[in-house]
Amino acid sequence: MFETISQGFQAVFDKIARRGRLTEDNIRDGIREVRTALLAADVNFQVVKKFTDAVVARAIGEQVVKNVDPGQQIVKIVYDELERLMGPVDNRIPLAPDGPTVLMMVGLQGSGKTTTCGKLARLLQKRGARPLLVAADVQRPAAVDQLEILGKQLDLPVYSDRTAKPLEICKKSIGFAKTQGRNVVVLDTAGRLHIDEELMNELESIRKATKPQQIYLVCDAMTGQDAVNSAKEFNDRLAVDGVILTKMEGDARGGAALSIKSITGKPIKFIGVGEGLDKLEEFHPDRMASRILGMGDIVGLVERAQESIDREEAEKLQRKLLKATFTLEDFLKNLQMAEKMGSMKEILGMIPGLGQKLDGVEIDEGEFRRIRGMIHSMTPEERTHPEIIGASRRRRIAKGSGCEPRDVANILKQFREMKKMMKDVGKGKIGALKKVFGGGSGLEGLVAEAMGAPVGGAGKSGPARGRKRKR
Image (cartoon, rainbow, N blue to C red; front, side, top):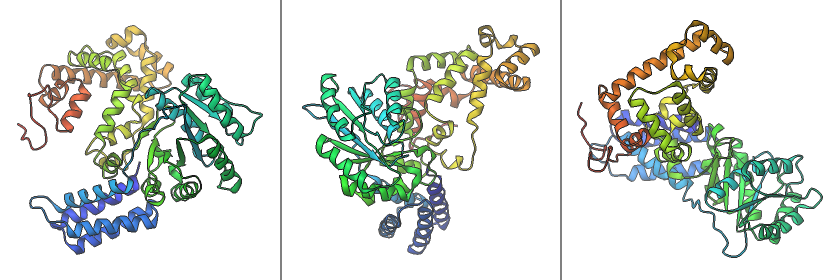
């Protein structure tokens, strides 16, 4: 996500840092490169000019702070301006006090609108709402079927009528929601391959008849300037309340995310970061600015962990780790919990300091599937006592998981080495790791340390920031 912009910014920061101090000349030289990077990332040229002018004005007027290198100063300025460019954002969905809340989803065909309706319904469920999905897209073949399938996956009702017009479907769905005790109605309206008068007239009719509390425009982030242009046209006709950007996980440029708020004046409310129904996240400009600049997103990482990981199970696995009683069955559970959080590269990119180091690094996600397949091909006894796995068992496991016996041998070797290392950690032989795992749950301790919070209980240690560590 945002690799093009991140790489451009990092090159500029490195160059300025080598200059020793901020001057008007090196600021303007750097901003020229920033401008090039933003345009290459398909950011709207008006937005680029506005952004770079703001950075130059602040940087030139910034008082030089002693003992702070110029690279850090310019990073702070760029961070603030990025946050201002994309925000502020209110992620709340206001619910109507009387009658069901109507949310109208609009967008072009192919933007991921129907799937996003399902994702939004799941998010509403988590927030305690009782949503109803409405299949009002009768233009696209199988759109109704798709929404009904999503409804079954979420155990939610779907209102549909394959013989009726979209306007009639939307109007009747509100009455249906009242009879079913549903307090939120999510309207999946039709899209087109391009914006046309017929589409807009239909959407305006639905808006007037249903009086939605919120209208959300669903845009494909990977279409860059096309997403921004369509967002402006939809907003001009419908006065949308917010934007949902889909396919953010595949957008290396980031042009749409940086342009939409400035061009339309409407905030990005949510972003789609994967295909699963749980892959819809609130959009936070400060966190996004941090990730663009390679500073990670530790708060987002904690939230993902809290949602994806069973705390009791994680603490149980941690105790086994430190006592070296960790089995391959436990390792499999650990893998499955990690996979719920997202791709490994995405997770690592959220850790401060790792984002830029991952540029150009390919992480083979298939390796985790192969490991999982090997463990699934083992018997319960082999998972608990891997030392009994000899040559014949390795051949059987390899055949069952579609790999080579040497692959099984390598995994077993790595597992033995990990157990030995964790045994040393448990005995206090590796101080740094012991400290991390000693602060509550492993992830909690690591995150608390990264955020400068006390680790290992209140009063045991001060904030990490500014604290001298004993070597």
